Length: 82
Image 1: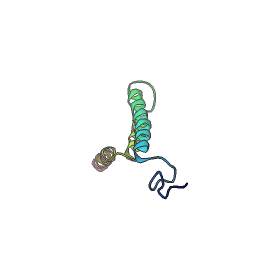
Image 2: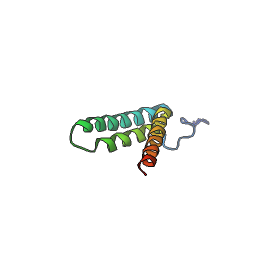
Image 3: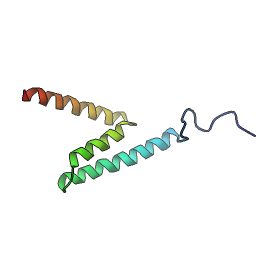
């Protein structure tokens, strides 16, 4: 017997929204934490932290707002340097 309802609404990969948030949060949090550690140890800490924030922004609006804030600050600093 086949069910008329799909187990996952519109997701073709078969991952629920909650599971996707957990995965993205774990990966993004780990990458961001590694970047923060690299700020005090040898390594590209700022770049890795920004990459982790970018991963988090795919699922979490708060991270997206932080990226927008950084972009505005970078834009203001670039204009001040001219």
